[in-house]
Each structure stands twice: as structure tokens, then as C-alpha cells.
Image (spheres, rainbow, N blue to C red):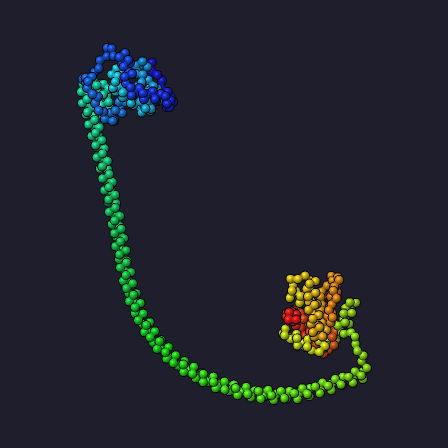
Length: 484
């Protein structure tokens, strides 16, 4: 009863080792072979002493495949011991892994070969019968015929194997020749393609050569034009050099003329300076006369003023107009007096501050925060006020003029330090701004007294200018303080 083939394609390692040992030692099969040798006859004409023929590789593989196919169909006692493990292999591994053992048993065990041959011939049908008779159909596969002849070994089986080997070699040679022909055709095709590509490249190169020749002609023409332009430029350069030399001569002559004229002008200047010296001496003498006359006039006016004061019996005053404004401002808003006559003219020149402060009995009114925020706004308000008041104290001490500085927000001031001598510090009350207080101070002054208002506020400047004061920018005072 044949064994069932295992479904698992894997075989333990010890089985493979045993298989290799069995394939390499065919003497172990002597007992199995002799047990079946009684009464068995070997067909064919080959003697026991003749060596085995050399089989072509396709024939050997076909013999192993046929044997591996029928091996599981044999009864277990008819399978040699070394091949019993092989019979359990999966079909796709039986011929591949058991090929050495199968070939060894077919060579060493004629009885096993006969049993395999009987089943193979039964499966081969008419082809097997023809091979047993020693003939082979012309249309049969030579490899199949040689494999069956090796297993059945009829008379002339060696010739059948030789003929099959010759046919296999012929097929191999034909395949080689066909491969060579195919490769030759491929090389011919590639060569034809390369020739076509070469022709295209040659056409491109010819076109490129024509284009290069055309560009070369254009470059030659351009070169000729450039050479012609260069010659013309060189000619113009020679002409320009000649003109330059001519102009240099003219410039030298003109320079000589200018030097002569300069010497004459210097002589005239010396004469003019001498005449100016004489004129200055004359003017100085005339001014001395005018100063004497002016002194006499002022002395006369002074004596007339003393007589007028004595005549009017005017007592010296201890309060100035601005003091009255400050007192009234602390109690109630004053009313604007009648429009006074204009006492000043428009000016924004900072240098005018010193000139205006030099006038007799001048009154300097300063818009406090307008000046401090423009000059040193990075300080706190208290430090700004202190710095400005201190600077104004220096100006009052130097000039002897009346100085009034006005700040916004009297209700926010507490514990102010005493003002320097000659400086009046005022703060606008609630509901009134420092600008209005400055205009009130200007309106309180008598006509004819020089009043200087320092503020960069356009509205303040326009308001005090209408009442005859001198408006100046904050920069004029800041520069004066920086100079002190």
C-alpha cells in the first residue's frame, strides 16, 4: 500500500543528513537488492561489466523526475531504504533534493530500476512500448525516448541514448545559433539605428557649421566696421588733441590777463582801503560831535524830567503793573483795558533777545511749560520748573530786568521753593490757561514799556503782538540759558 505524501514541504535536518549518507554509500542496499533478485532478469544487451553511459544533463534530469513521480506509488517494501525518506518529500522537493540518492539507486539496484521502469512504461503508453521494441517515433521527444531507454534498457538502448544526446546537442547548437542570429539581428538593428542617429547628427553638425560660418562672416564684417570706427575715432582724437593744445594756449593767455587784472584790482583795493581809512577817521570825528550833542540832549531831558516830577509831586512807587495783575488775578479775572498803541514790530530772531533785554526797564514774560518741554522735556515737571526758574534768576541778576514766568495749574502745585530775586512765578488758576494770563500781563503794562514774551505758541505770539509786545521763540531763551 503506497504511502500518502506529506502536505508539509519542510523536512527535518536529520532526515536530510541521513539522505546524504544513504546516497553516498550504495552498498547498504545489497540486502534489499538481493531480496528481490531471485528470479529477476534484466532486459537489454548490456553486460554487468560495461560502464554506465554518460547521460546528457536534460536526460538525467528527466530520469530523476520520472523516478521521483512513481516513487510514492511503490509499496513500502519495494522502496530501497535510502529512498524511503525521499518518498515522503513533497512533489516539488522530491526530484530536487533526492536526485543524488535516486540516481545512485537506479545505477546500483537493477531490481528497483525494473520496478520503476514497469510503472513508467505503463504511464508512457505507446511511446514506452515503442522504446521497449528498440525503435523510437521520429516525432517523439528525444529526451523522453533516452530516459525511457535508460530505464527499460532494450537492445540498442545505448544507441538511443547517444542519438538523444546528439539531438539534444543539436537543439542546443540550434538554440545557440538562433541566439547568435538574434544577437546579430539586434546588433544590425542597433547599427542601423546608430547610422540613422549619426546621419541626423551629421545633418545637425552641417547646419551648425553653416550657422558658424555665417556668424563668422558677420563677425568679420563687424570687425571691419569696428576697425573703421577705430580709425575714425583716432582721427577725431588727434583733432581733439590739437584743439586742446590750442585751448590751453588760450587759457594760459587768459590766465596771464586775469593775473594782470587781479594786480590792478589789488592796487585799486589798496587805494580804496586808504580812502576808507580817511572816511572812518572823518566819521569817528563826526560821531564824537554827535555823541556830545546827544549827551547834552539827554542831560537836558533828564533835568526836565526831574523838574516835571518835582512839579507833579510824584512819589516813588513800590509796585509794578505786573504786581497789580498778579494780585487781581488771585481774586477775580480782570477786564481788558482799552486797546493800547502798538509798541513793537514782528520779529522771530533769537539774537534779538539780548538786544531787547538791554532796553531800559524791559519786562521779560516767559511761557513756562512751552519752554521747558521744548528744551528739557525728558525731566519731571518739578525738575523742569526748578531748572527754568534758576536760569531766569541768573538773567534777572545780569540784566536787572523784571522777569515773570507763567505755568499752568496752580491747584496742582504744593510746597514750591522760593523764587530767585527779581523773578516772579505765576500759575494759572482753575478755569483759565497760562496763555490768557500772559495776555493779561501784557495788557496791564503802560504804553511805551518794552515787554518781551517768550513762547513758541503761535496763538500766544499773535495775541501779545497785537498789544505791542515783542514775541520771541522758545529757542532764543534756551540758547541764552545755555550760554549763561
